[in-house]
Image 1 (cartoon, one colour):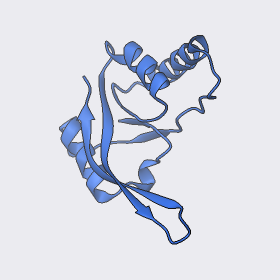
Image 2 (cartoon, rainbow, N blue to C red; image 1 turned 45 degrees about the vertical axis):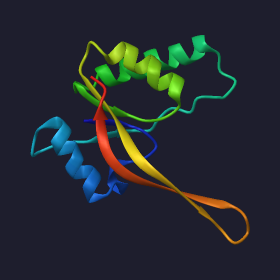
Image 3 (spheres, rainbow, N blue to C red; image 1 turned 60 degrees about the vertical axis):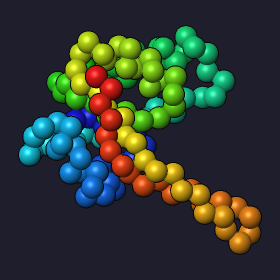
Image 4 (cartoon, rainbow, N blue to C red; image 1 turned 90 degrees about the horizontal axis):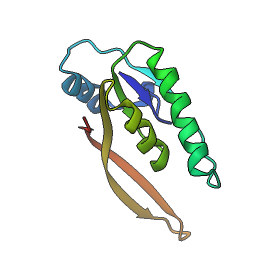
Length: 119
């Protein structure tokens, strides 16, 4: 599986690593980490499409047909439009918990739930 996110698999919980085996239906799974590209907030739709095409091209050259991708929504969407005929795709789901700190700031905790197969 190719993990395109800012969450390297080396920092995943055992629950996440086990879930990969379930969605890939395999006991032995190789995970290749690719950092999710930085998408400037002022990027145009055309620029995001270009980024998606570059990412798609890079991933296709790796010879894997299973992708987990999480990141900026428009790039994920454009990437999955390209990837949909190539292989399987998943996103991760999590429970979001917010903890209010004494100073008024918030700490957000994401508890992994599952990988959701998109196609």
